[in-house]
Amino acid sequence: MPKGPHSFDSALQTANVWLKAVDDRLLCDDRQTAYEALRAVLHVLRDRLPLEAVLGLSAQSPMLIRGLLLESWRPQDGPSGIRNPVAFCDAVAGQLPPSFPFSGLEAAEAVFAVLAERLDAGEVRKILVHLPEPLRGLWPGSRPVGAAADSPSHRPAPSREARRRTRVRWSLLVSAALTVAGGVLVWALIVGPVWSGAIDPASILLDPALGLQRLAAGLLFVGIAMLLGSTLAAFLIARASRS
Image 1 (cartoon, helix red, strand yellow):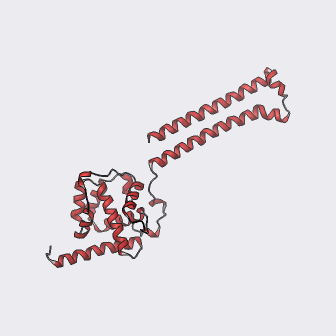
Image 2 (cartoon, helix red, strand yellow):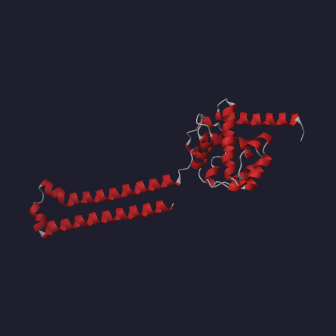
Image 3 (tube, rainbow, N blue to C red):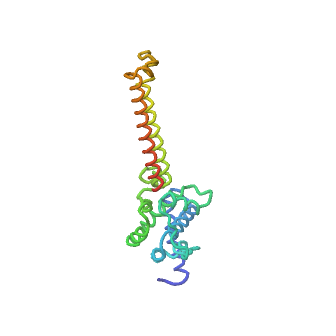
């Protein structure tokens, strides 16, 4: 490797090429914005990887990009433990200035696309091995981020808390639906006929062959519906709490 000022000039030129690549992905035409995205994503990725993976990524990176990667690194803290894309993109957004014009997701996708293009394929595979499966979905795409940022295939998977809330909501809806169904059956068997005049109200209590049978059947259906609804709700809520 050449020594002296020429090597620094070459490193600066290479860093600018990387920034231009991020710039092209974000469609922002602003080197400062590209720099902020590259720095934020590299830091969150670095803090998620184990020591040996960070050192491997550092060895494969150009000189100034390596310095950006290792800036303020605290290897003694260990990997951050982030496991889902939402948390990863939130961490990226937390490293970006408030005026940054793109989301953490857009920054992550842009930088990962550039890393996939410019790093050795074997090094990229090593990085992906150390990432949980949901985070691998942020790597890379051949499209610019701004071209289809709302594409469903590039949205992060819902968090565990969001899935839990959805299951609880559905369990309550199913329980309410079963209870309403039981009430409809009571109306059909007892209240409706009485309301329409088809059955004498006194016969509901006095005629065992008609009133009590209908009353018993109605209460039985209501009881079964409420039991099924409450059992299903309890099962789904307990399952959501464990997931």
